[in-house]
Image (cartoon, rainbow, N blue to C red; front, side):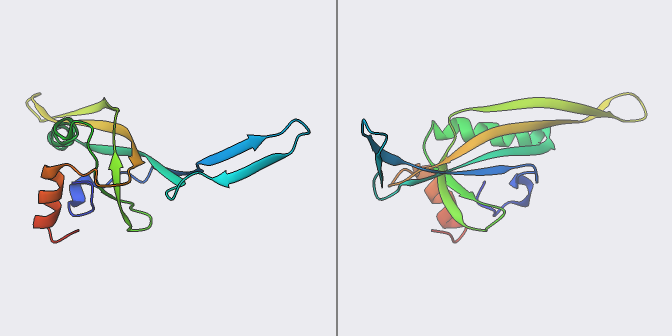
Length: 139
């Protein structure tokens, strides 16, 4: 899980967090603008993350994201340790390298799963993610 409970699923250090204020802006003809935060959850956070892992771990991550069917899931920001509910609508896997044994047989395949996690608000966690997190002692 991306909640920090599984070391194998921690993102690579090459990640970025973006913070964006959601604003309601009224623009007037004389150049004056009135700005106000839009809603109680006006700070929108997103993370561009990369996971450089072996093919079996990449496959598990892919299956997990597909199984969520765009529902939210727990994600622990590695920089702050804060647990957020996030969604992931799109991700990509790039295969990087193959290791071979002495006989020339493929020993391991490594890839990079790249995704954007966007903070979700409200009761948006899928049932399976909640059950898994509860079994780990979270939430």
